[in-house]
Length: 447
Image (tube, rainbow, N blue to C red):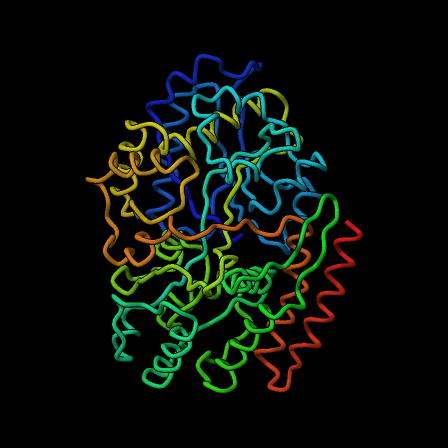
């Protein structure tokens, strides 16, 4: 889900890609997505990648267009034809866009890439059609994590090198932060479908699932002991402990800004948030901590995983589609698969004072990921020691994919459930979940 961090890539190693430039009367103009709100260093790094790409591909002119996927605007942009030629979407949107043919079929071009058979199978399926052909390219993957402010931990008398390991620990730490510092010990995303996203994350961590798939039949699983326990935990933090501050309407951008400015002690979001927090929210690296999500002691407990797909507009002609796949290869993926590309990308990124070496789950296999870290070791400029509570354990946790049916719609109907629990002391959790379950089932049956 979430905003999608700028993924920087290489240039020089792509000269070979220029051999089959798109056939057109003149240069192909390719509109590509660029995150809004970037600082000057990030924009300079992006522009440098554009210059590198255009030098290696003289038949293609890159035209950046500010774009950031949000649930409330994407559908209108898609219907109105205002999206860039190359744009990104969360994993949860992939299959639906493919089935409705709302993005271009680039599977033949993707299949010709030298690393086409090296994608992590669990990641690759997010961009594949029913027949296994890849219409959308996974460019980043994530597992959810618990982010925490090391400075607030210290001020509250907590050890930032020993973050919470259970949800009871999180609750206790949140109360201690709130009592000692006056800041929100723990905050929760609740709007723009993120309320449902994070509620589902916590449900997974408690061992629950929000849907059950049997053949073509999808059954809502919201009215469950696990989700009841999650909401009761949130209710206790809010009303018994008073440790969640006063803002209960956070979206992704809002909670990142509050966290980066030292107003929030802990929150749950994607494990790869560090880059966005630094480039878009001016996070001070020394204050940042991240650890794996606590998991309930049951076999079903797991970490919600997702990621970002690069897609091409359904309006694109063959020349634009060819150019688009070259850009996706160059900008997003080459640094993950090519030593020279990785080194050049890291060197240029570090020179622009952008993060190099922040944690992320691999789009490709673990061996390729570990090897790629070695390629850029000399350019790493992030506090690796502060990431260890996460990176030491992130591959050991069971990764569970997001719900696959009516995902964003179900997330949306869960937003007010979380909001109600956090704003109404007398909220009836059982009633809220019973109604939400019925609404979700109606959605699943309809779609």
